[in-house]
Length: 330
Image (cartoon, rainbow, N blue to C red):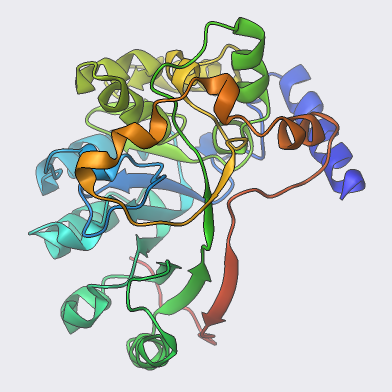
């Protein structure tokens, strides 16, 4: 574990010295490539209310991108950015009333080799076959108390295999706290949380949202958590305007060691571990009323700073299928 952490640090130091962004982002054919995927928020709201949802879905108003917006934003990014997968996230993305149209629009932009759906799985039995066929991979986050049991998993494994779609079920028995409404004024702590944040600096959890490029999904949702206008999230993003310097601005943004404004209220990957619970939506904000200092797992923070690979918040795979030959991607 320590060796892997040292390798990650050395790779990051080399990339930054060479003017590359942190993590595993690289160039190919003049385009930025993230480690795995770029993300589209298909729905703000969710059909369950997890106590420490890092999407703040329990307090978000209903909202969905339309196909035209997806086409505009991802088409502007495609000439300078390419991912292995375009990941469709929420909230619960299957709540989108025009889910198939959005997926079709996303695929047509050519932003990625394939389309990946991240879902809690509860609505999968209602997904039409035509929509299954638009997907290359599905990752199901399995939470307690949602009815996604062994029988359900077996049925969806069979369905996915019949549809030639890869599927993986990942169980999450606990969450790390993501947000602090009061936040902190400790600039050193903010910087430590940011520099150990794998979402922003290693995993490449990039969000293309409402005409802007974000490093991580929390930066989209922090304004809602603290009662600020949702559009203020754009202060922590780069406009997707198609300008000739857009690639340079995004690279400068990705390589920056300066914490985001949102980091003042975000725990990164070092929030305290809490058992997964479903809570009333009206009670969700109260779960995040403590200051940052009271919610940080300082032991995890120090271990990450020492180079250990904790892989926090990754869950455990409980089932998956195997597709021998991947379907060709248009």
